Image 1 (cartoon, one colour):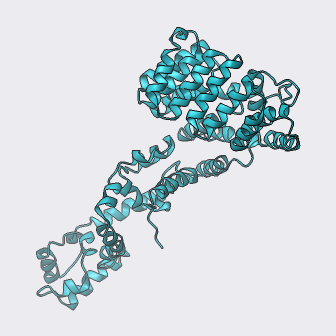
Image 2 (tube, rainbow, N blue to C red; image 1 turned 180 degrees about the horizontal axis):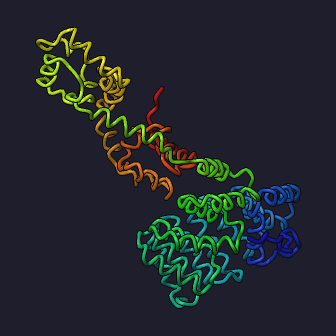
Image 3 (cartoon, rainbow, N blue to C red; image 1 turned 120 degrees about the vertical axis):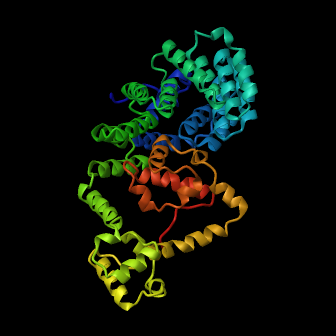
Length: 438
């Protein structure tokens, strides 16, 4: 992955750079935290300059830094130009001021903005506003650019995907890449669709192509790391995460993911633990008839339909003693057998008693809340990785998920802190949480 070189662009010259040059410069600024800090300092130095000719450059700079409210304030004071209205529209769209953004894009046409670019940006704005009909109508006006413009097919694909037309979306993303092989956004969304469809080899190929051309595409690197980790290719996953941390050392998701990967490297199948679990099950299934008991004890247990050691764990001393002809002598015989296996009467009942408060709470849940708990986990819109882990645990409803503790989830292979935090956030948004043992 090549290091991104700083473009020879000065945003604060008397003449503004071209839109393409500004885009390249913005990519450079976003390629690392240090670049962002340096550029932010330069913008702050220029903030005291209230001259009209600097307002446009400052507005663009503030938009690049994600300070869109300030960007709008500066751009509105700037001299009318194509740059002013295009970047004003970008900032307004980021703040979900969709009508204002469309109006600003239209005004940019009066100052020489490219008509196709404006139409496609308007379509994107309508799509962001969930006005799919208006977005489709806007794209129909660009139909002459079918099989010509990569951006046209990318925007078509995004609209298809928003409406659940995934096959059509994939077709448009492929066409965009055919027309422009390094169209990063088309590659990313194609990779994401492949990932969700289970076509992991194709997803990896797309993400790798993005990474080879843009070491700054953090989302692509993080998604690629997830796929590598799922395949237990931990070194490759780590390389993706380290690449992100090299330029974004405070990226929280990457920091958590790094811990997950390091934990995954040390995970192993505890054969001894599994063998112990199997042996325990075998012990519980051992028939009472295998033990030397008095005739009286054996007959009593048979009449009580207690046939295995496991059955004895579901009955208390008091219940045994209350049965006709079952006395203290028989009780001592049974307890001696269980003690030899490190078991005792009523053990299973104690575990059920521990869980009873939770069941009592469940019974007091309102019908509305119960309906929420019965909803499928898919409604949480979790990442691919988190959903795969929950599938391994055979969890289908939100209620089943809330019955699990953090420890139970983290016990699933490849389920790390990143996925746990994502699930906790999704449940918190619904005013729910995982089960606590406190």
